[in-house]
Length: 337
Ligand code: ACO
Image (tube, rainbow, N blue to C red; front, side, top):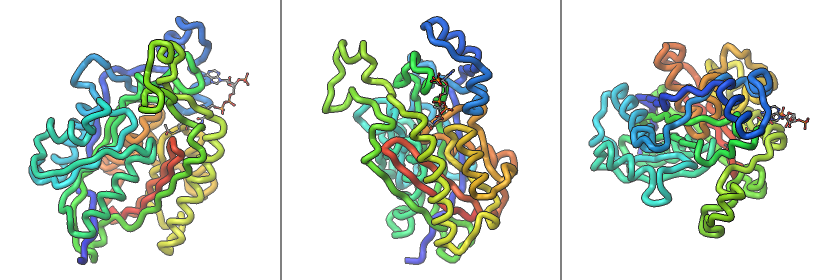
């Protein structure tokens, strides 16, 4: 078995509704909570984000995933019936059952595929891509579709100014195809890890099988994200650096060998701190957190898609993806484009 996996198409999709920091300032003022455009920009680098219209089927999680997947298939020159596997990374699925992968399969008519979801929060896309790559390398899958999509707004507590300013909705997707292992254009290596002891730093208490959602729990917002932002910030900077350095070292590379660094888009200050520690100039770092906020599993495929479509990423370049998320989960991946 001499196979490797190569990304041959990328796509993204966002809801129409553009919500600026000033819109959030007004929304929170109505709830008696104070924030400002200046605070949000300075502490996070976020200027605006997209928020889904939750009653609108065209902006369901799986519908954003569908548009992103269609764009990726078009770039790859593939049709839906050529997909053998759908891996859908999300922590905000349309429904607990069936999986988002099955919703997408139904909508896109990928009748020759099997699919499953991965919930690794913001690391989900790298977990998904790494999983697809393993199936492709063993020869079991020829063409995979990996999606990272979120509609986070229903699980955000709009009275918690620490967290509600950060998140946005959106979807990214990639088509991954089997190539010969001698191909220089391929996924080179990846590294995944999780630390469940840190579950409390970002979690949703109710709505699962251990705490059914009742009117009383709903009123206490136990179905919304609880986040310890400061603690996450420190761990994120350290772990993103460790992961990047370890993966580079293992592959006899240094940060200087990278053409592009693609970090999870949680906060511009986290991104800058990591780039600084890796001694990477910001010109080599892809950023879209300013326009979309933290879209969790969608940040990496959407920022990647943007840079491919506008020509910044070129054939033969070396790219490092690097993410952390609730769990806590961590993942990094090296790609030769
Ligand atoms: N507007 C105005 N003031 C605010 C706001 C706001 N929106 N939010 C917090 N503040 C205040 C705080 O109350 C605090 O005031 P105090 O000093 O009077 O107590 C002050 O600003 C400073 O608060 P800090 O928590 O120290 O602010 P910090 O600079 O750490 O920024 C933030 C907070 C943005 C949450 C940051 O810590 C962060 O981005 N952390 C990472 C979070 C993250 O990445 N989460 C996603 C994880 S990935 C996933 O799986 C989804």
